[in-house]
Image (cartoon, rainbow, N blue to C red; front, side):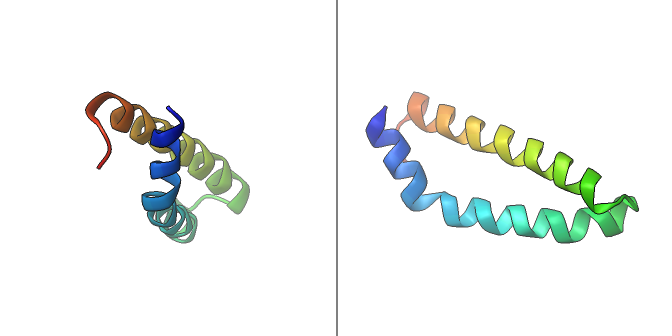
Length: 63
C-alpha cells in the first residue's frame, strides 16, 4: 500500500492540483455560485476523485 501511495503522489498529484485549480476558476462562473460554495464542492470532488484513483491503482496495479 505504501508503494501505491508513493506512486500516486509522484505521478498523479500535479495533474490533480491542476484539475483542482481549473475547477475553482470555472465552477463559479458556470453555476453562478459564490466562492465559498465553489470551494466546498471543489474540495468534495477533489477528495472523491483522489480516493477513487488510489483505490483503482491499488486494485489494478500501478500505472
